[in-house]
Each structure stands twice: as C-alpha cells, then as structure tokens.
Image 1 (cartoon, rainbow, N blue to C red):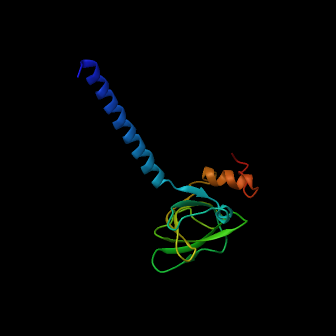
Image 2 (cartoon, rainbow, N blue to C red):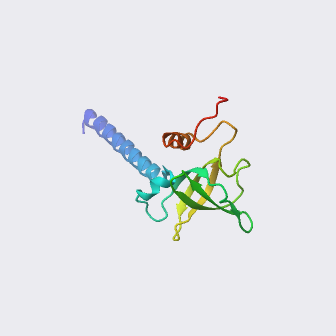
Image 3 (cartoon, one colour):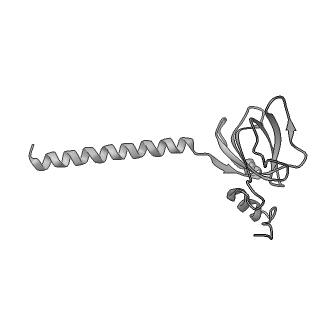
Length: 147
C-alpha cells in the first residue's frame, strides 16, 4: 500500500465511524422522543400501545380526585375533549383546577393516561408555551392584561 492509499483508508474508516455514530444517536433520540398532544388531537392520532407522549391542556374543574397515598386522578381538557389522567406522586404546589398543565406518560389498557410527571405553571403569568399557543389558537385561553 502506498502512503496515499493508507491515508485514504484512514479517512474512509473515520468517516464510516462518524456516520455509524451519528446514525445510532439519531435512532436513540427518536426512540426517546415524546410528542405533544392536546386532548382533541388524540381522536386523530395513531398511538402505539405504551407510546410515551406529552398531554397538555387545562385541569378540568371538579375533576381532581385524591386516592390512597399519593395517587391523584384528574381530567385534562382543551374545552373540546377531555382525557382522564392518573398520577402517583407529589403534585407541583401550583397544580389546581383550571390551570395549565403538561403531563408525560402513556395510555393504559383502559384508556386512562398514566402520567409519570406533571408540570404546572410556575407563576401567575406563565403557561407552558406549547399549551398556551394551542389554547390561544382555539380561542380558549387569553393572556392576562398585566403583562
């Protein structure tokens, strides 16, 4: 092998390694991606059993039910459709009815969304951007006048 051929084989090997590493990285990130849905979007979405998603909307008034221990059941709504959510854990301090919320998890066999994390707004003027944009587009939510 000449010196030029050795150099080209090292470069080709390096490019092949970088290509394989990039491909594996994108594959791994694609497997961990959580897609964002509003309750009305779920009627047209084709979700795989156990597929992780983010569900956003407002906590429906009168829907919060405290179970045994740290289990809480509530509904997330976008004023078109609502989805029952079950969560076991400590809820954020600002979690309450009528507030914006994003939950992350998957649906069980009974059609209940089992959340493993719940995010609520953190002050009087904040709503998660994805939720606020969708609710504004549907005319359900308006920003406060104090901003």
